[in-house]
Length: 187
Image 1 (spheres, rainbow, N blue to C red):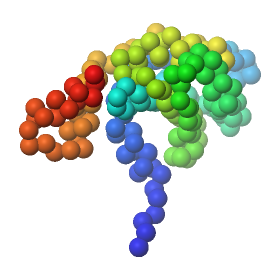
Image 2 (image 1 turned 60 degrees about the vertical axis):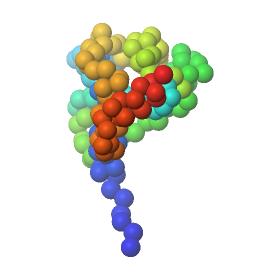
Image 3 (image 1 turned 45 degrees about the vertical axis):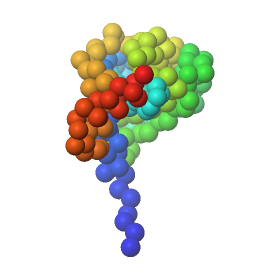
Image 4 (image 1 turned 135 degrees about the horizontal axis):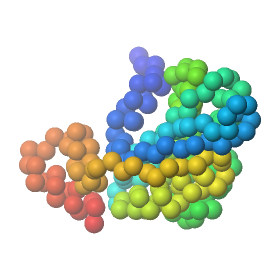
């Protein structure tokens, strides 16, 4: 007997493992969105998943309130091949791949864009702030009408997050053994 695949359940499972790093708000300056106003606001949640020895991915979840279907289609068009190409030019060989997922379509949400962008990199551990502030957000600003405000960093350490993630997955009889394994992986 096979079980059916539930995309919502799968997404919740993946999101649970991500460690919140930061968030930022941004303005969207696009004259065709609303005739009476040239600026619209959005929010991006930035999380990461580390993979030994030093790689992983950054998950940027964009939330944008929309008023109508045309506005939503216009904004969704910014997430795709042009942004991938542009980020590649900023990040070079450290970039492995970029994956987009429209969470508003998955959840059938009408008046919001919830777009997730997973940026897989070869070297992430210890470089998150630099990658986000010097590569990712400037690349996105350069090829979209988005203008980011300063990033607000979540108070969290990578060792603590990796330790918690591993301890959630595995039950060790010796807590020191888990710490030694995590320290070895972070070298």
